[in-house]
Length: 114
Length: 112
Image 1 (cartoon, rainbow over the protein chains, first blue to last red):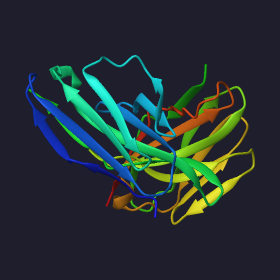
Image 2: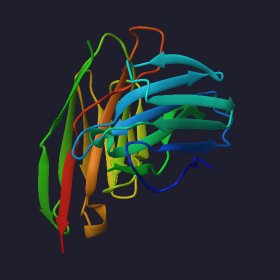
Image 3: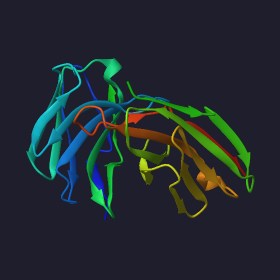
Image 4: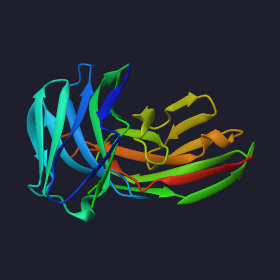
């Protein structure tokens, strides 16, 4: 099973709201990622967690706050977002299945900021 | 700096019309080339990982091949349900982190 789940599927929020995105995997992967994707563009890396510690932050604004409570869960806390933050937010985990070391993506959360 | 260029940007095929998508890359030591399929509004779905020149992998109507400079995704007798954006990504030996570089994708439309 190579499933990564994300909730919610869709989220609409105002610029003053606080919300969270959730990602879960049960493949035993120890690296998890947050990406942001705009229409007709490739995924853009935001954060990387390795063994539950933040290893990479691609200069993401502080209104995005990641959290990794345990090896299976990844959260992205959102606060005071801007309309330009509207995008598809993707979670991925990385691990070795059948001898290949690969990222597996979740279905994404479609975020709209009003 | 790793670079990935996918061509064509968009491709329209008739059902049954075989074709190939191209992914050209420049990396300092390839540690994996990945193909994904992405449907509109959904996350990328993993298709293949290739590691060395000459390697080939197949899945249903799709076959991925790899040379030292590029990879091809061959689509044989496509069906309308093969319509999607196909993303190529590479991972290099530079740095210590597993951070793939993605191409901009090829949007494939297969007409019935």
